[in-house]
Length: 171
Image 1 (tube, rainbow, N blue to C red):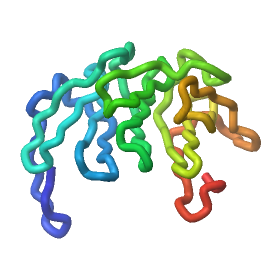
Image 2: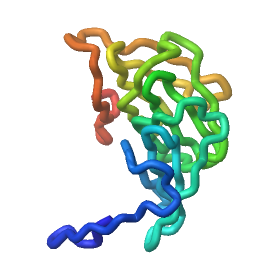
Image 3: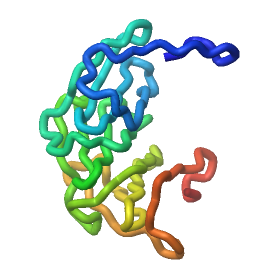
Image 4: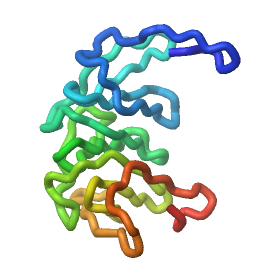
């Protein structure tokens, strides 16, 4: 971590991590916890911002290669994980338990390096490689489903997705 933007000095904060291949770090909107998605170690969580100590949270996460994490800004207990070859997983209990989100058109073996959430109403977008963009408009429900949302894209290798916070129909 670095505690200075003007004069950064970096220190390792990796106590508890089983791998240093961190693909994504995400902080919940209440600043209660932060999460790390890793290659080979799955998801780790820390609630100590001053001196992070990481704990693995992987129950039900059958692919430990996590490329991307997205936390629902309206519900910090709902987290999505994009994996390298197993699609998207969802936790509804702050990362303690995970379940694969498999219904719909998103391929079961999708590589998902990008996730974005439109919080109102909750819609999750998954950028995949090489299958384009998919969205779930019922991601908060018991059985989320995915539909293809790539019309007009000239390439299907999606590495980033973002939702315009002022005009959420714009990605």
